Every structure is written in C-alpha cells, then in structure tokens.
Image (cartoon, rainbow, N blue to C red):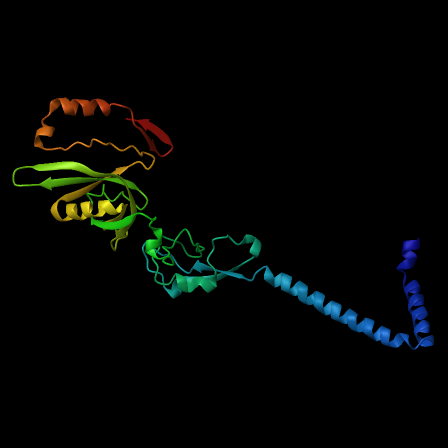
Amino acid sequence: MQKNKLFSVSYLKKQFQFAGREIKNNPLLYPFLVLCMVALMISFKVMGMIKEKRFFSRFDQSVLIFSKHLSQGSMLQDEDFDIMLLPKEHLPANAVRSKEKESFIGQKLLRSVEKNEMLFWDQFIVRSHAVPSQKIPPGYRVISIPTDEVSSASFQIQSGDHVDLVIESQTEQQSKSFTLLQNVTVLSTHSLDDGLSYSSLSLMVLPEEVPMITHSIRNSSISLSLRNPSDLEVFLASPMVDNQTLLDLGHKNTLQSDRKQKIEILKGQNTEFF
C-alpha cells in the first residue's frame, strides 16, 4: 500500500506543491533550481549521445569482400572489392579493413574465391609489404635454379619443401650422377601464367654452396628429389653413379632389400601400406 502511495498521482502532486511553496518562500533557491534543470538537460543530452555512439559503433567496422567470382591467379583490381559493415564482436582478427584496400591492388589470388567472400590477410593474398631478403636467415644465401616438370617432381615442389640436388655431369668419355646437396630448403617457386607450373625456384643455401650450384647450372643438369620435411637424415657417403654402377647386381640387390620396408601412404581417410 505504501508503494502505491509513493507513485500515485495525488502524492506526486502534493510533493510538487510543497516544493513550489518552498521555492516561493525562499527566492535564493531560484538560481539553484535553474542550474539543476540545466544539468538535467545536459545529462539527458550526453546520455543520448552515448547510446547513439554505442549503437553505431557496433557497425563501424567496414571490411573488404569480393564483388564477384575470381579464379586462382587473378590480378586484383579496384572493382573486385565491395565493402561490408560488421559488428566488432563478429569481426575476424585477420579480416582486411576497407582502408587497407590499396595494399591489395595488383596482387594475385592464391586460390579461387566466390562473390561476397570476405578477404583475409593470410588466406588469399601474396603480400609484398616485407622486403624479400628479410625472409633469409643470417648466414644463408638464396640462389635460383632453372627447372621443369621432370626435374621438379612434376611441379609438386612448393615453397617450404626440402629437396636434394642431384647432378648429372657428362664428359666425352662417360656421364656420372651424384647427390650434390641434401636437405635444402625451397624458399619460393616462380610461377608461370597458369599458376600451376614454374620455370625456376629459389633455394636457401650456405654461402659456400652457391658457387657449387652455379657451376653445376653451367656445366651439368640438376634434378630435385623431394623429401619428407621431417626426414632430416643426411648420407655422408653419397654414391657416385655411372654406367658401371647400374650394372652392379650386388649394389642393386642391396637397394632392393632396403626398399622392401613397408611405406605408409594416406589416401583420403584410408591408410595403405606398400
């Protein structure tokens, strides 16, 4: 009953009448009343601005999306982008903001994308912000070698893979093949227009290995043997192979025995042994 009395119209009317008599009897309260009304108006104004800012701040993150379907290797242009507004709580950390669009003009797609698909820093674009030489660890050098489908294991070799360099040296008398370097890191491949093949790739090697490779490029042919990245074993006594070695039955039988070990190969979700 007391609660109903507090919020009844008659009760509020009596309270306003009492306040009016007090102000009328004490003129000094007029300036105080004016200040209270001004402060109240300012408070309502500020609260409204804060609410409005909070509402619109939910959608003040504009990100880039693709305006159409684009194929792998497409060169990005300004008309390939649209802008989408996203709430902050739904914004992926690596999404590209609209103000960063200029950084992607002229870049090539790493894979095909669909219309309205969001653009991410680490999924679609080959970034060129960093100087290429910054990728090279201290104490190493990078050298490019020519390659083709046969010498690159059918273009299966990609950036970050580890390879062995096999050299075939030919003289007038005979030809010899041997492994020049083992467990060499591939820094990058230089793709052709189709985005699937390449004519050269860059290797990260020691400074002492650079002249060995350049000499081999000019005087021999180089093939690359792709290896598992977790296979770090290096053979110190790498064989020199010539025509006589190929006729050595005992050597071939030894290798055949080593290859009889079962190899586990994953095909989809199935595991097969060969």
